[in-house]
Length: 290
Ligand SMILES: [Zn+2]
Image (cartoon, rainbow, N blue to C red; front, side, top):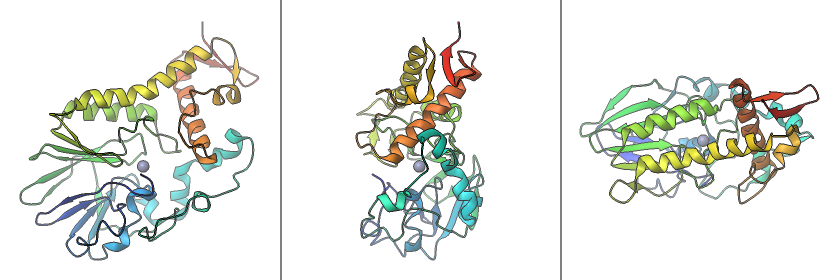
């Protein structure tokens, strides 16, 4: 779990490591062996261990490459400019001030400058001898989120399309629910033998219906959207909707989880409005179109 993530090591020639947020202890034997690091996306828990691999070539997505070089671009991805409006008061604490890092995570949450050696685009392939790695652009969680398909062994690494029991996360400025929905459908079609996500145990085809798990995962968000639509039978303010128990479902409630839940709610309201299902009234009330 945050601030860690799962990594995948492909012991080929070249050897490849996907994501670097598993902590220094996990990488103890790997440090000198990695030729190429592929970053699934520019979130702290996936990139915080980059300094463990000073000799590796680092690749990241075209979409998020500017966010590894420029702190203000990185900051623009998170959506904190909406904090005061959505939360009713200014942001008091940075995420780094509210979380204590374990001793094998070498940096604090926030901007991590990384010099990139390669740019990832959809369909790009790396040949490691025994394995081909294919990049799949799967935006939604973030705009430059990539999954990686290891075709020969039937292993799909789906990053933060992570099958969390709390559903998908799309709470940043550069997150998009329509894109996320399309990305999950795309991964469903692959029907891999093994699914590795960033934050859960491995799922194997003989033990689990992987396409169904992906559908169930997306359904958590679609159910939430359905609840919102039901609730809007009467005009409601954003604050009214945001305070409903079906909106913020994380087991630990912090100012940040509350903010992300509200960002996700805002995306659903805009989506329902674009579909012509709800209307935003003059007084800031939302209601179902009839
Ligand atoms: Zn992420």
